[in-house]
Length: 96
Image (cartoon, rainbow, N blue to C red):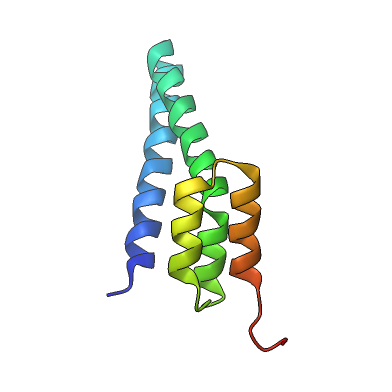
C-alpha cells in the first residue's frame, strides 16, 4: 500500500479545513475561529518544512529512508541534525 495518496489527501483536508475556518470566522465575526485557522495553517507549514529531508529521501528513493526519517523526527528541530538528514537524503551512492 502506498501511503503517499493517503498523506496527500489528509494534508489537503487539513488545508481545506483551515481555509473554511478562516472564511467562516471572518464572515461571522468570530475571531476565535480565525485564530484557530491561523494556528492550523502555521502548523501545516511548519510540519512541511520540518519533514523536508524525509520527503526528499522518499522522492529520490534513497536507500537510507529509514535513517533519514528517524534522524529527522528525533532531532530535526535542531539545525545540525536537520542538515545531516538532508545531506543523507541527497547523498548519491554512485559517486564513490
